Image (cartoon, rainbow, N blue to C red):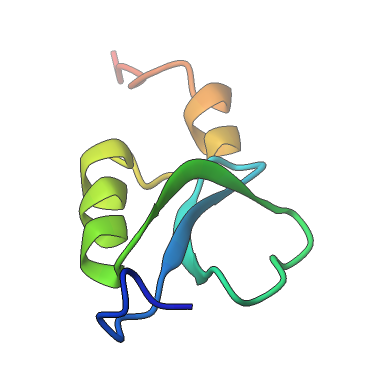
Length: 73
C-alpha cells in the first residue's frame, strides 16, 4: 500500500509485550507477539514516532525488576 499514490510504503508502529517498538509494513501480517499501537505512516514518520516514544530501550521486564542502583557501602 502507498500513501496518496506517492509510491511510499506505509508502515505500522508495533510493540511487543516487553514494550519494545518496531515498524512493520501495513500490507504484511503482524508477527505473533506484536501489536499495532495506532500510528501508521511512511517509514520516516513511523521511525520518528518510535524515536519520540521509546525513550528507554531496556525490555519492560528489566525496567520493572530493577529496584534502582545499589550502593556499595
